[in-house]
Image (cartoon, rainbow, N blue to C red):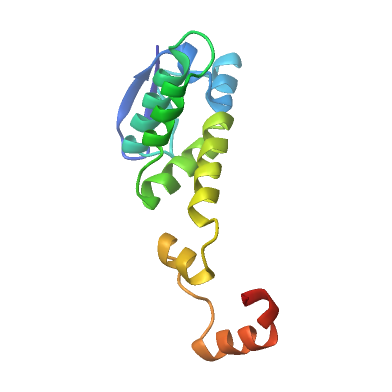
Length: 146
C-alpha cells in the first residue's frame, strides 16, 4: 500500500498495483523515492477519491472492457465542468494517460457544435474583448462565424 497526501491534507491509501497506473507515482516507486507519504500538491482530496474509484473500476477487472464498463465510464465522467477540470488537471499531473484521453474526449463532446459564446458559458470563461472589439472581429472575419 502507498499513502498519498493531497493538497487539502487528506491522506489516502492506494494499492501499489493501482497507483503505478500513474506514470508519476510509478516513477516515484521505481526510483525508491517513496517516503511514508507521497505528497500530491496539485491534487485535492475529492479528486483523488475519484481517481482511486477510476483505478478500482478499470484495473480490478479481468479481460477487456465490456459495454458495462463503457456505461460506467460515461456515468463517471458525467460530472459538472469544475469537477471535470479538476480530474483533467489531476490526470495530467499524475500522468494517467487513459483517464486523460477519456476526459479530453468528454470535453470535445461537450463543445462539439457549440458557439464560442456557448463554450464560454459552459466553462465560465470571460471574454477578453469589449463588445466593440468583438463586433469588429466578427465584421472582419464574418466567414468564421457562419
